[in-house]
Structures are given as C-alpha cells and as structure tokens.
Length: 260
Image (tube, rainbow, N blue to C red):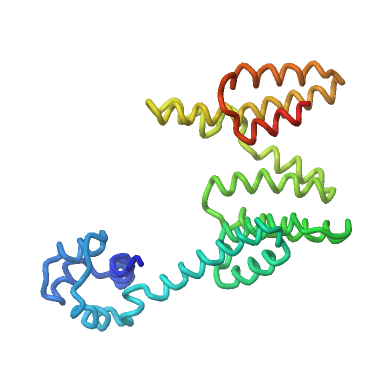
C-alpha cells in the first residue's frame, strides 16, 4: 500500500503558504528532511505524525492519505468489475455500476468512457437504442467539457461523430468530424522523427498496422463510390507487401475479412 504522506505534506504546506524551512523549524529538524519526505524518498518518524497533524490542523489519517487510499482501492475495484461485466456481456449492470461510480468520482473521464461504451452496447427497440445513444452522447459531451487528457478527448471527439450520425444529427456529426486532426499531424508521425533504435522501430511497425486500416477504409470508400472492386484488390496487395512473412494481429485479420 502506497502512503501518500509526502504528497499531502507538500499540498497542505502550500495551501497554508508555509515554506519547508518554517515547517522544519517547528519540528526542530532540517528543511532537507521535509524536502526528502515531499519527494517520496522517506517518511517522517511515527512520533512526528501527531505533531505534524496538530501543526497543520488536520487528522493523522488525512495526513497519511488513508481516505485517498481507500478511494483509490474503490476506484480500482469499480474498473475491475466493469471489465469483468463487459467480458460477460453484462452491459446493463455496467451502466448501473458507472452511474453509481460517477456520484463518487464526478466527471471522471475513464468512467464516462465506460458508461458511454456500455450504453451503446445495450439492446432494445429502435426507440430504446436511440435513447441509449443520446445518453451516451451526453456522457461524451461531459468528457469534452471537463476532460483534460488530450488523447481521451481526441478519441471521444472521434466516437461522438458516429453517435450523432446514428441518431440522425448528420450536420452535427460532420461539424464534429471536421474538428479532428488530419492524418499528417498524428502522434506516430512525430514520434518516428525523434525516437531512435528499438523504440523507433516499434512505433513505425505499430503505425503501419493503423495505416493499413486507414488505407483499407478509404479504398473501400472508393470501391463503393466508383463501383470498382479493383480498389479492394489493391488494398489486399498492400497488406501482402507490408506484412509478408509476419504474424498478423487481430486488426489486420479483420481488415482482410472486410476486403473479401
């Protein structure tokens, strides 16, 4: 179990506009000791905990981060339960689980993603499915409003386009899609310029798998709009060239099935 005392000393000290020197003077120790605790390189002696809690005006439990540890354990259990339910197709149970969890962890991006995913997997009448989609959209809009992780926001922006499209809000889907970055300004395109050796090799190979999906996706679109199966043959040839003699992952196998 990870103790959060160093992080809490630093947070509370700053909230009270205290320097490390001032805290150290009160305890009769060097400020280097305070710095060490805050970096997580050590813990205060147990006899100092009551003195520290009195000085900061907080409880020893709060200083140790016991409540935070309990919340972290709860959060981890929620996500494990969601994963298990998802594997077993218990999507309705997951909707209930996520809605309850969000009362404790409001606006949490991961929980909102899992709520959205579970809602879109629910079965029912067309009217019910539209209702679930609208609920999913509301959860995704919440991510876009409060989420800070750029990757999660990007994925949400992509997914919400299709949700808008499915409920007939085509203009909104197109408007949102146009906000997405183009293929040139992707993470992998930048990383291969800066990385070296094995890391560069790994990123490049992973990017080729993704790019294969993109190529197949667009060639399939051309096949549809021009009524020309030749595009599908070209896509298959590209896969053969890129992955000849290599073990193919599930995505490449799925692409091949789609092109048949």
